[in-house]
Length: 122
Image (tube, rainbow, N blue to C red; front, side, top):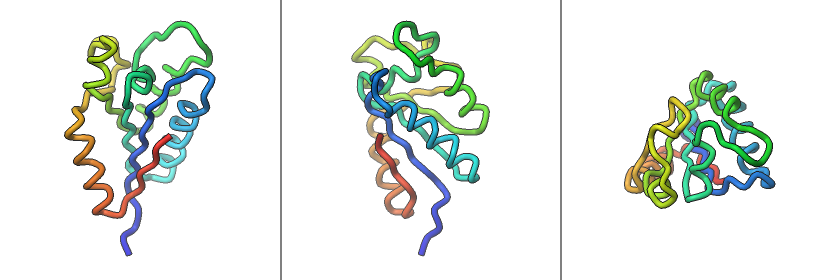
């Protein structure tokens, strides 16, 4: 049996009234504190908004918590396709967040599944 060492967290909806963004960040911090390698993929036109720096409107503000996760070693990737759909540019992302293409996300699903690693969609 393979031991879980990596966690792939997927966020598709960044609705301020939803618990999904908060849960994603809490899960990322929790698993990282347990020394897992954590990768968060921000997907869909709403999910990629978590990666936008200096968001206005809506509460709570997430930028500092995202930065805290990055400082802990959590890796964040933002879907290029969804970002293009809403006009989100690289320079608008919180520093440390990189773009990822859909093909790479699909490959990560296969890799994590083949390795019996943890995949969570919120």
